[in-house]
Image 1 (cartoon, helix red, strand yellow):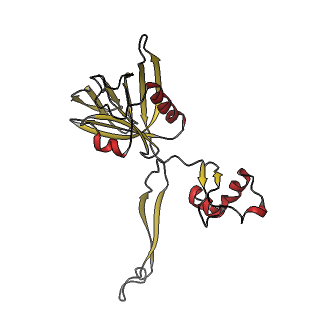
Image 2 (image 1 turned 60 degrees about the vertical axis):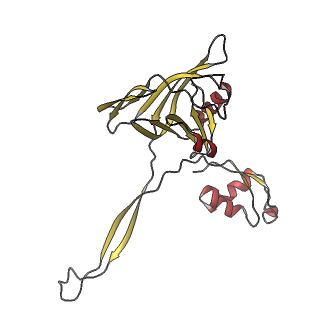
Image 3 (image 1 turned 135 degrees about the vertical axis):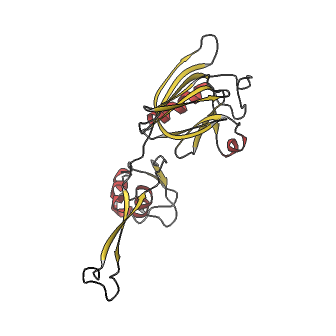
Length: 249
């Protein structure tokens, strides 16, 4: 199955049915242009079967278990072959292998989107398996790929407040103010890949960069040490300076 690099332009040109893989909160995406003959979505539990035009039979099994998605096909070297559903922005098989391999090794989740006549599925996933081999006599690359659903874990936010005392005339117990706790839900998961470098802007310093990029202004000394910046130069940093950033915790 071949693929294309996609962005805002491709959003407007997507075919009616497609399989898309994206990374870094959708900033980097590929669209598989040849739909697989078979696509398997597995979960432990009860199941439903869908007949998908161009995809064959899809078995979707529902439960609380993590989903697993797998299919196999090939990256064609010829982007204008009749089985390619979209010939714009074609990229070579080698380019696409490197792209998916880099996402697999990044330790950050990707997102798969499947659009077919009877279903639309979008799921944060880890790339579990990506096996490929060259096809003799051609520049095509055959591959098998599988994904596992990725669950974001984040602490739930609790709002603590005080409920006013009851009106006069009620019992002494009811007249006391009470503390209320409301579940505000978990924060929306952040699928962005943290930056490893940052270009200093006018008026910024290491304190503001640490707060903005790392979420903790107290980590400015880590940036100082990583970039070998002397104490005497902390107030002399020039806009446009490229800073290395430590991993985000």
